[in-house]
Length: 244
Length: 306
Image (cartoon, rainbow over all chains, first blue to last red; front, side, top):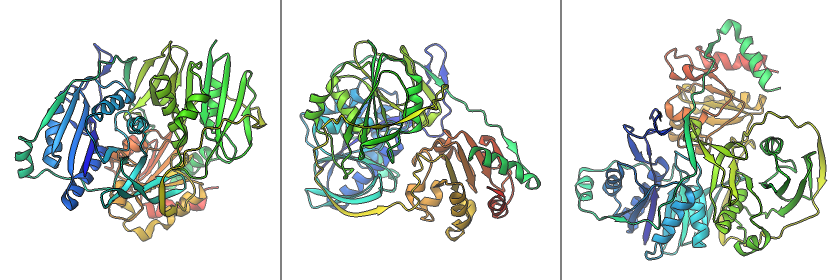
């Protein structure tokens, strides 16, 4: 069983975003960068499967964040066996999907896990596009994943009507979200062994330029109006007004 | 010629407010509305010149896929813009078109002109402005609360007579169990959302929250700690790693307002916070807040609301 986990590297969820006035883009210098939270659920589940039934777990990242190596080593410390890093500026979901598709021309995986979305763009498009290219099914968001033998999985996935438990054949791509697994804290042994696990840097298909012009940080000013219990009717009026 | 295509998925034969707002915003020589639907009729099509409509039959099985070859045969790249709603089916069709036309596709677009468009990132904490591609279609998924300065008030009922045949690739899926969500109001579409957290003290206390939601025809949400300890189902979890909501009104009860929760509710127009802790960080991110016991406040609201 070969599992590939596609990860993104994003600012820590508590980061305060700021604009670099020289580029008019978000300034990533000084921000703590982490594995995308949804991707970390995906990786954690892959490692659980490896521990339960045995599997080879690879991680792939497309991008050129300054902390890439450190974050990929953390993935190895959590329990991935091998990491691949396609080093190029990631400018769109399609570009990342194309890069991973190209990588998959020489490597075969039974199961590809991603997060349901990356928390910077919140788009969820990459796995969707990759699945179309590979002509394999894609399900998202997946909250439960169990292997059935070597050729199929049982998953719990959100659908229009609610949630469905389904059985589908491999290979496929799953966009993960909690509670698919518990986040793993790397053990000392994991951290030590991560140093010697393979981390391969790969050349990109090509360098893509972005059509982005500028970024802007939105700070929504809230009214912060305190309501006392005696004047709760003020609040009732506000709610009635909005909900009429 | 400026031609634009809009892909949408009406509910109960009505197109969404976002699509109506989009229609009122865009300027084009011709607009084609492609509706993915089960019925032949749409009740609320705005009176707009140069608007044409066709339909794609919605399959009963939401796991079905659009067929790549049929999509390829049925669509041309003459549109400068292809807009779509962020439903699974619309996104899948739009992704196929991005692949066929070899062009970019982006989500969370909240404003657009003929030169540039803006995309919400980091759950609405920031935006990126992109230049419009001139030589290829721009494929743009719009936010679910896309707004407009121009109100449309005249609508007509339209019978769909032109159908595009692209939906014929059944998914190889064995359905073991299907649990229908009981509230019926989807959090992503709800105009009002009532959320609750650990301040509720115990899961059996949720009755007043459910009553309030029912009274306001609101969606039900909860904080992450509450879903983690199984007081509430995970599909109600709103926040950084849960669902992102953008209702007109969000009422948060007994939630402290950690930054991870705020990331999921930033998009709300008005936030009301009920929390007896005067130090709760949520107060600073609220439009209205009340620092009293929620077990007093909510019954009082229930008594006084329309």
